[in-house]
Length: 186
Image 1 (cartoon, rainbow, N blue to C red):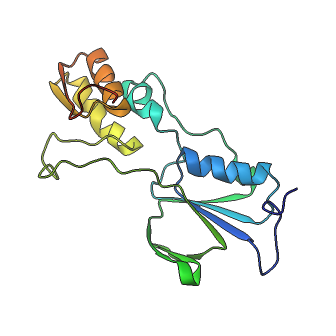
Image 2 (cartoon, rainbow, N blue to C red):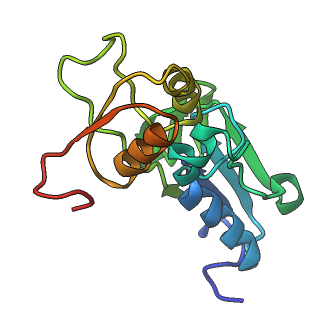
């Protein structure tokens, strides 16, 4: 076992906190255990849902061809503490603590695996009919839109935009895709 994976005394890592319960965060927690790390592993996610894979959201989960995209991981058996629905709003590196809604969370090693936030269009916040697609809750808000077969404009022709446009067409919506780059999937 390497020095990096062993539980250490006061001078080394005993508590690993992973903030972000998406694929990178889950894989980090699982890999720590698979590599023999025996210290405390805590996985913090802002959403209340069991950790899930995001790529299937934009098509399979949205269209109902997959019920869920939750990771098939037994966190309890791995000894990974899950703190779901817990937003991290600050980091105090000198104190080795995260600030969360539930109070401070101490760590020896911190892994930030929070992913990216979608680009928000200026002036679109709170406008009826304007939706983002990043989370399971976003999918639940978009399903009725597709069920009504409304005309849809997708801003962004990256992977998520392209997948959503495909799903919207499959659902019977008229779709227009707007992309700032010279081509889709640039």
